[in-house]
Length: 280
Ligand code: SAM
Image 1 (cartoon, helix red, strand yellow):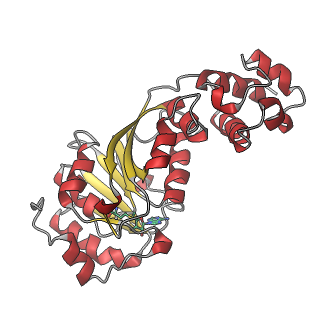
Image 2 (cartoon, protein in one colour):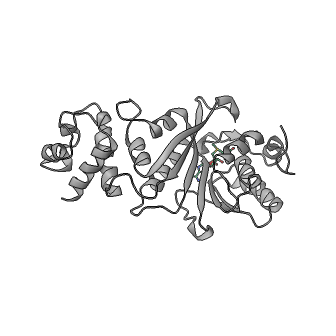
Image 3 (cartoon, protein in one colour):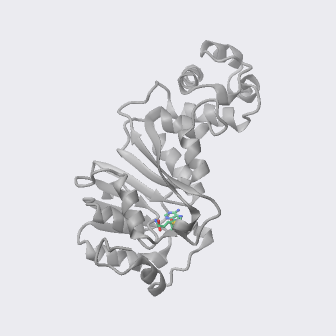
């Protein structure tokens, strides 16, 4: 493994700081700095950018982001045991790394960042999807970030880039593709992580579009697709019954057959339905 900086190898960092992986925090660490630098390169030219990193752990990806030239990295980590290791990285890159100990779901990063901002994370599955949905559904667009480069289990990554008609198509595909360009840019075997998880992983890169592909209110669209796919085997007239008394008429006016199932309906028609529901 070649060095990307003058800091100790990550295995040594893990040992000296006693960072035994905790399952409760979804800790599967990336210890190969060549790999973390490769992931960081997916963020593009970082020279003039701030990067928000969620869940840096022992700092493998953080070091990749800094070595790839990020103007500044703000790293939010919940596990207090990782903070001294991250502070060592901050000392090696003076003025370029700020570490916050906290829960990313409850921490507002914006006070510490300047645009343009890109986001990178290798997070536990449930937090990763919750943050992704939050980042994709602010009321106004474009958002505070330019791009998201996120590690997910492979199956979740496939859901984000899925097309209508496939089993993986659902809420995540609609919300991601409505306002962003989403692609899988890397696949990683379980053995890339320490300890190895049970499943394969993939990195998804999402670039914010200047404007959503179709007009819709974010909260309404989220509500409509959550209901539609919650009961994905049901016909939409049944799955969406509680949404409006005249839901069949609204479906037809949106170009959707009331007997259609959610996974056959494309983004444009879901947005039309969300506009109809929002209109009251
Ligand atoms: N980025 C590191 C890497 O690639 O080796 C660590 C990845 S590990 C899969 C997930 C990291 O997210 C852990 O360091 C864990 O402590 C942290 N984490 C888990 N939940 C978090 C939360 N709610 N807020 C911030 N960090 C969290």
